[in-house]
Image 1: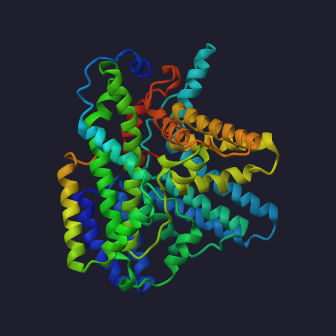
Image 2: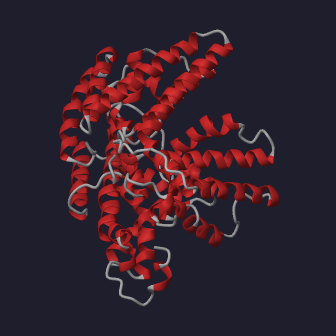
Image 3: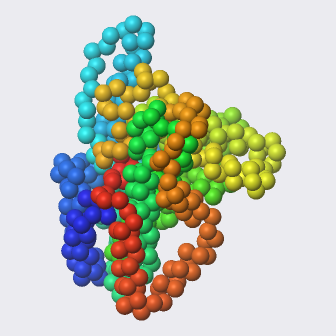
Amino acid sequence: MLFPTATFGLFFLVVLPLSWLTMPWPHRWRPFIIAASYVFYSWWDWRFVLLLAGCTIWNQVLAVRIWQARVPSQRKGLLVLALAGDIGVLGYFKYYDFFVSSTDNMASLVGLDLPLSLKSIVLPVGISFFTFMAISYVVDAYRGDFQPTTLEKFAVYLSFFPHLVAGPIVRPAELIPQIATPRNPRRVDTSRAFYLIATGLFKKVVIANYLASSIVDEVFAAPGQHSSLEILIAVYAYAVQIYADFSGYTDIAIGIALLLGFSFPQNFDSPYAAVSVQDFWRRWHMTLSRWLRDYVYIPLGGNRGGTILTYRNLLLTMLIGGLWHGAAWTFVVWGGLHGAALVGERWWRDRRGVAALPHPGRVAALARADPDLPLRLPRLDLLPRRLVRRGVGDDRGALHGVG
Amino acid sequence: MIEGLFTGWGEPAPLVTSGVLAAILVGVGSQYLPARIPRLVMARFSRLPVLGQATVLAFSLMLTSALGPEGVAPFIYFQF
């Protein structure tokens, strides 16, 4: 069920008034919104709902056990168990075929013929987003930052349909207190909500879809049949398309959540006007950037272990960020390029004491040419075919797939 | 793809239309708008009476529908 469709319009036409009627009484609203969110999610495939429900129960049980455990080793063991379950499920659905094909390709390079077979697993839509939110919940419980709530409230947190399939990645401390308290339908900021929904629809339908159908899809499908100018413009058009597509989605999601009485964090802040790669990641998919910072970069040691370890942590974090975006080597290279750029920028800053190139013209060139090039990389045929995953569609197809 | 960036200059480019260039310009140009402008537009919209807001909203939806291509492509980030 896509936001800019009549199906979603009808769904929301039923859900919104019922939500407003029940929201002053959270004990009535919560079962209603869980049911509505599960209906929304089942529109893709009803089996995905079982996965979502299973993920909810798994993380709730372990978060509560972690919170209650007194012995540090027991708490750590439970955390490892919770993370193994979350990452295991994500790895199976999202990366199984990628790892099998990569292992098979590497083995064949040294003359080994392994009896591995692909499963062509259907990727449950939004699994990367709700898995990361579930990980936030158990890790925050482990750190003592957030006391686990009831199963019902956690189920709303994880399944709430405005953020379910493509974020923003909302923290437990940001959403669960809102879920726990009565919402007043008379205090809903409808003006801001409608403004965000209208601008989000414009970005998605007019800018992103128009560029995709007018130039991007055609050129990327058969670049050899197009002139250099068309390829160059298509590359820039794709950068604008992916921004308009995702930030448009986020605007609509935030607007819909506002209409339901909930506030989500900002996810984009004019990323192509960034003055450095670090600045770019503070502005692009902001909720993912801070998730990677707080749950990957800082646990790896952050910048606490000296220069070399900081560089290693930056690279590892961005490689994981790249792999999160897609199960293909192009995404790994994309993450590696961003990591290398962040390391280079940090090295430059440490050496020269400035974070970015100072001249406005050079800053503008950097903002346009550097940070968004890696965003386009996953659509470019830069890697040898043997490194591109086999049998599950190439990267171009993956970028168009609903999963 | 990369090779094509360098070898096909001077060839016709029928896909590079004024509409495509305008969409890119709007997409990139909007990033450089001062933050106060969207806030100002939102504040003015908020001050409109309900009927005015409904009219603006209906007009913007009609404009979106008229300018956009037919059908709805899946969101790119759904694959993640």
